[in-house]
Image (cartoon, rainbow, N blue to C red; front, side, top):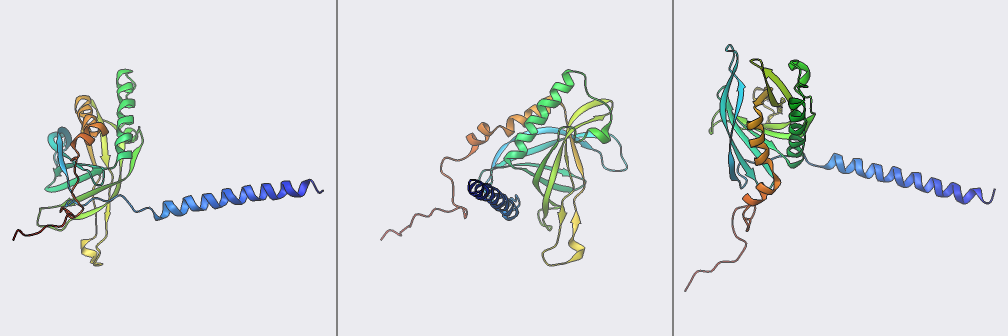
Length: 235
């Protein structure tokens, strides 16, 4: 009995420590702020890609469009800007999302080369998982209200016009008016973007962290865009 008591306390201590650590991790995750980017934040052009989008209803089929890509280096976020149905979207990818994209594209290329793709669009749009917690801003014009929210981007593929495309699907984001104006509340639509393998690889190259680091200025401005050094008037 005397030998059992110390072991009991050791086991009790270990379980208590594990439970305490788990609670601390859960608490930290709950307090972590959602990913968010401001269009006023410092940014640099990263390039431009081509992609296909669905035509506006009631038209059918797809059309090719240019997508401008920029890098917001303070937030380490890559922005894909495009305009659909008179609305401009700014789709922001954080680093884990870009890593997920690269992994998904590798799997897609393997399935493509192995002739393993199946024409079942409803079941393949998230074939390779999702990039969770991304961010989107949308607005009708530069003078209209900016609406924004967090959303997931599903990674998979679609068959369109009898051909396979690697697809990144922007899932809906919910905007809630800070002034409690119910008329301003809105959910963004689900928007799939279809990429040929050449187009998908072009985006992958822009997602390269080495490439993005090369775009980052050597001397970063302050958050306000001004120097902290004291200046004097000559006299």
